[in-house]
Length: 248
Image (cartoon, rainbow, N blue to C red):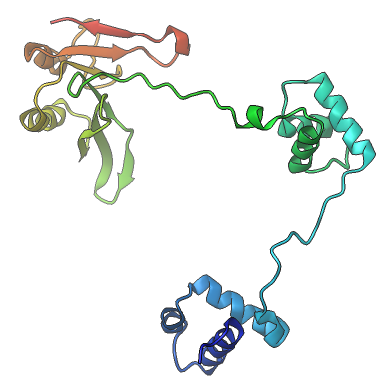
């Protein structure tokens, strides 16, 4: 005979309380998660057999927006027509209004008064990512910071193909030494070929120290026929950031 949900839940509870089987074993037997198992156990302890009944998923609390709140929302929106519910809510809170409804209520009120349309709320500016047309046209190289391990500090070296976003190299080193980078790149070149251009920041070991413009590593890359590009420091504004390509 096929058992219904209540019978199965009650059966599970009784077995769990008898402690003849572990919770993990019972979860496997009844095909439920540990989270669900403890949910039903806690409901049974608090409410008895009635706690095993399915509960309605409807919200237990419905927020009713007063006319005063609606007027405040619409007045703020009229003052700041480009703002959404979140900004308008914080604006009213900063103005000293204490009984301000939730952000969701702000958005519902704006939609109800046709101040936010479905088309406008779902419209997003397309994300544009500039990428090269073919593999090995441009590789991006960087040390992704460093962090402490039991053996010492770890410096992750990454090399990424700009076209495919494929990780050409991902290695951990004790320091950002030129020899380590050269070894990693030699392995990458043998497996994937030479890139046309490599770009990196102005850090060690690929940027020369004053008064030298190039480091030994960048000179080695240029002798291999690879153009080297350095990004400008982050102190510049985004629109001012350009890549300074170094020819062979």
